[in-house]
Length: 184
Image 1 (tube, one colour):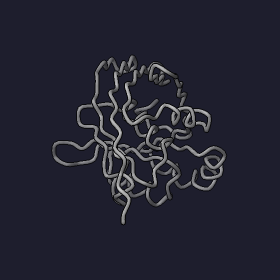
Image 2 (cartoon, helix red, strand yellow):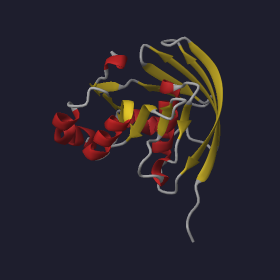
Image 3 (cartoon, rainbow, N blue to C red):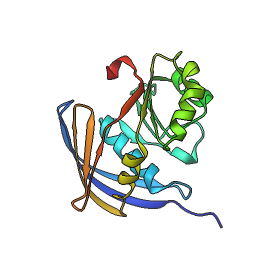
Image 4 (cartoon, rainbow, N blue to C red):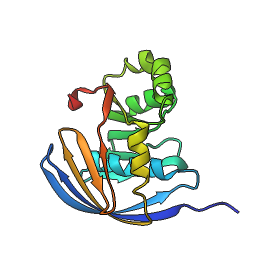
């Protein structure tokens, strides 16, 4: 018998000072059986950083040809492709060829620096790619906020993200390994 996704509900009250965006979102996150709380919460944080009218979660781990999040234009062109983890360089190359902008949130502790050394040269060829590292401490603290039903307050200022559930608070300070001009 195949395992089913676990459904999480999140009410996200977002105050993005950097973009002047103040909005509440009612989100449903389906956590794939192989997905961790850490990865799911990074998806949620990525949603907050890129919140927009047409931003949506995709099939994620259930589909090889889709990112975790994307924004598609009304003509079905991919404007933003958001990836998580330490993907194969070929996957990112394909994403960069399909989307106007690609953002990777790399996490995994010391594995990130090893992955980056192996892929930096090839990835530097893609001027529409941004690679952001989240520290192990930050991503683990984020995972601790995961609950089946979440009431979250999120503030973004000067690129930092603060996320609180009333019981705990996490600060995410992304480190840019490679920066697309729109993130300058």
